[in-house]
Structures are given as structure tokens and as C-alpha cells.
Amino acid sequence: HETRQDGFEVDDDVERLQVDVVHGFLREAYWSPGIPREVVERAIRNSLVVGLYAPGGGQVGMARAATDRATFAWIADVFVLRQYRGRGLGRFVVEALLKHPDLVGLRRQMLATADAHELYRRYGFEDLTDPEIYLVRRTPPEVLYAR
Image 1 (cartoon, rainbow, N blue to C red):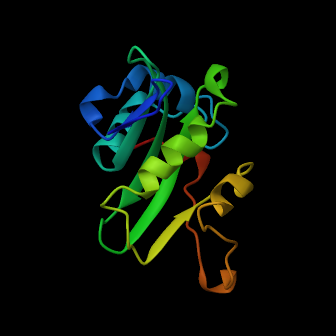
Image 2: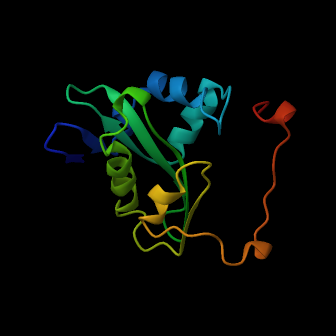
């Protein structure tokens, strides 16, 4: 848990997360359009999550890591609601997630982004030097949320 001087705070307590806010954002995000609420809930349950809260307690953002907490983490679902952008809150929530004790010292932390490369480069993320060794398995859209 960490609070900035302006009253914004980050917290890894999943009980504080406002799933309606998270789902409302993610179902419209370019990386997860139409994602069902139950999938968001399952992702939260099975991840390390840091919520971002405005003074007064309303949730305004989040960052999530799918991780084994030993060797690997996939950083995902990082967002700040549009009306709160431009205040350094994206950096605040990313820093809080990356310095979480369960992520420090992992062999590999990865992510994918269409528009925030420079933000993540500030924290040591870089382009793959050997992309030919990495593979991806994509689920077809028609079965994506059928589970």
C-alpha cells in the first residue's frame, strides 16, 4: 500500500477492487473487447493485482501480473480511467506493481502493448532480442470466451 501526496493510492488488497470498474474498462479496451465479467473475475483471482484509487476510495486504475511468483510474470490489464490520465498515475501504478516483493528478482517479466512502449522502457522493458525463439498460441475469436 502506498499513498501519494495528492491522495491517490495503490493497494494490492484484492478485496478493495471494484470489479464493475475493472470490467467496465476492460470490455472496451483494445486488448480485451467484450470480455465477460466472469473472465475478469477469474483473472483477478489468479493474478497479483494492484488497484489504483482516487482520494475518497473510488477505483481509477489497475495493473495485473499473471505470475508464478518465482520465475516469470506477464504484465497485463494496466489502465487508468481516461478522466484521470495525464497526472503520472500510470507510472505510479506500474511502479507499484513492478516493485511488489513477489515480482522483484524474477527471471523474466513480459508484456504486450500497442501504444505505451516508452512508458515500459523506463522500467527496463526492451524489444525481444531473439523473437525467433518465442511462440504464441492464439485462441480463435469464436471460442475465446466459450469456457
